[in-house]
Image (cartoon, one colour):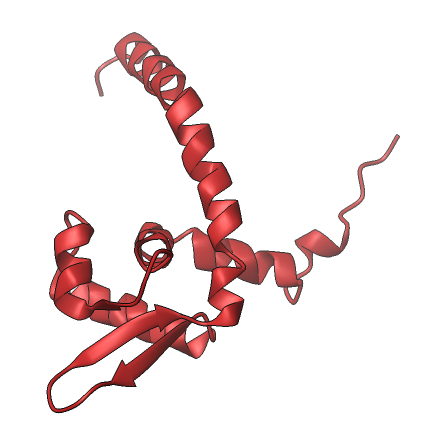
Length: 122
């Protein structure tokens, strides 16, 4: 039986766009960080460990272009980011992935470490 590529494998498939968005670890963390309430840039930097201000700005801009995040100015020098209605549709799938990671992350790390230990030094 021949395995044929379905629409998911086509370059213009919406599934590929979704994977492109969520494949960026920072995008997923920003969306999850905004899932409870709107936040300022500095709040997101504090909330998301390891992200630089520059990378956060780039991520927020990209998510804005996708229509997932809104940027609102509240007075001089106060900018707040929030999820759009479209952005909120990603919260549940991200929560599912988060739960999967909690339940199975240890097993993945165990397999990774065992595989790494069995690889010959290069």
